[in-house]
Length: 448
Image 1 (cartoon, rainbow, N blue to C red):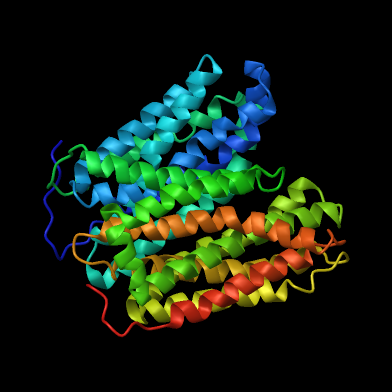
Image 2: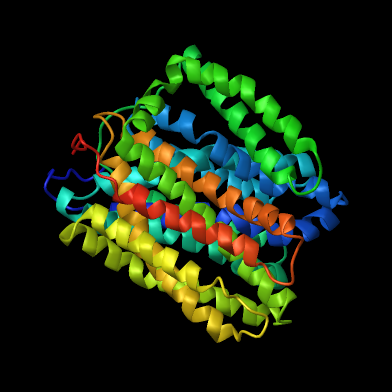
């Protein structure tokens, strides 16, 4: 069915729904496989370390290819790129579910991650382009809220599916959502542009960026277990330096040199790190120090996500009527306040004592998410919105990865005390640092 033509001043909320659906599914897939690794290892008779590549095979290309995907998407049509990415993501999800041996599964997950990187870049851009400027805040709040909710829901959904249907079901759960998103996109995505393969220079630049980011991500993965992370960080230096000197990094350098979007991107990274650290450490503390069951721990931490889901749409409306930057700053400040209130975390605290503090932090993150992404996208030069989306998504993804790693390191340096206070201090400081970064107003007006 041909795409419906749409006037420039007309909102297309079905296309915003596509952005929300795919953001939820893509982030769900980042964590849902982790709960099935033991079953995958047993089914294929491989070691737990080898089975980990069922998760890493997706996570690494999703993050490592964000910048190359953003540069490529600035040069092709949005509609064909979106439909192709949804098709590839769905096909490789099915391939993962029916895999008959480990190599088949790992290759399928890498393929899924490649198309997932394209979807990660496209989702905020699709939401921003689907509506008028005066309703962009509401539109951006949809993928910005549903994405983190997918990340949090992954382990819970995966556990239920694993117990009921086995490990293959965790690769199939997203298929109905992908099909629905494809049908909506085919019906509502505007025509224009075509797909074309990247040229040789683009392949080289993309390969350098991907190699550097892959080495950094593997360093973070191995950092807590052995000294290979130092070698991997050293390996990342050469391709990173080569890429930064080349033309492929030009749009990214220009975006980050602009103090407005540059500071917002750092703030996004800081708040994502704070979220990742808090989510990991609070659950660890409740079960380790208080002896609370896994189910009760999950319900306590779920309060954060519930508050974020409720306040996400509110943040979008506030951004449209009160101002994007004001709403982002208010949300970041509320998140910082919630994390600061957690700092006296004691072994005698009841889950309810933790839950109301998490609700404050989650409400703040819900208010902040959409407006912060919109600040970066509207700062992009004409024709560079996909690169801007890739940069902010990379900042958020690195923050989610860095948060637990740095919080654990901070806790370890304190001697693994009876509670996780040292790691929570890191999370609170990161959230507090984001507030002035978001509050800064660039001297040059952002591109509309």
